[in-house]
Length: 241
Ligand SMILES: C[S@@+](CC[C@H](N)C(=O)[O-])C[C@H]1O[C@@H](n2cnc3c(N)ncnc32)[C@H](O)[C@@H]1O
Image (cartoon, rainbow, N blue to C red; front, side, top):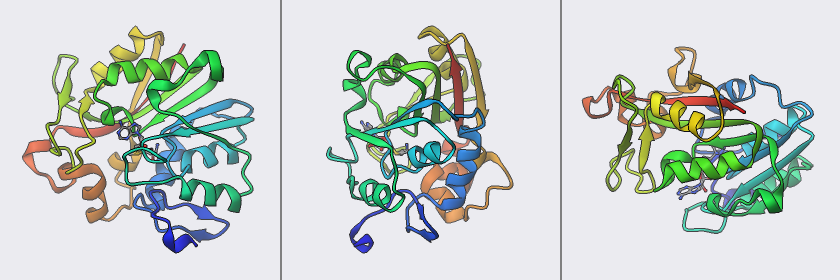
């Protein structure tokens, strides 16, 4: 049955690793950074969960409740489906809850707020990133964690880089990358006075073991040293109320 599933995350299902596009070592390195502030005993909302790696990881690390949400790659226009998430959920005997809902339809009145909101790898897919960030922020009671492509980090102004058509990694669903100043500024403006932005160690660390070809697939021409994207990176922002 797993042969029919197109995996995005390389999920370890009790010793058997699913052949996802995102390599297991990259995900593990990223998870160490994402969960550097403990989720033990916390409620966690994972927006754009796809196959659920970060949801299952939050559960494994002791979150008291996890809600996984997605739409674009579960039942929307994306190439993914929810089959991987559902299969993993069963194999892991997970207690994570799931809801098929778009970022812009998230409603704290209906769903309540969560101690920790994960907004990982979603921001640059949105045509209106600032409103998307606000929607994620509305759901966060304490901590919002944003992982994103960043660009123009040497620019002294706070800017968003726009990518026409598929000019970011050949993916026409990529639109905007903020620089770290814009990312931190937007987060402060929408209610998080304490913001910490760190490089995504899965990209930046020399210890990241991802093969060059995989890196290029995921992190674009920056890995190949092409001038066009030379000032590009990926960062993780932790934003506290
Ligand atoms: C790159 S994947 C990231 C998945 C996971 N959070 C991670 O970090 O590995 C992007 C996610 O954003 C979701 N998404 C939400 N709105 C989207 C949109 N308008 N275009 C593309 N993807 C979108 C997709 O369904 C997908 O799950």
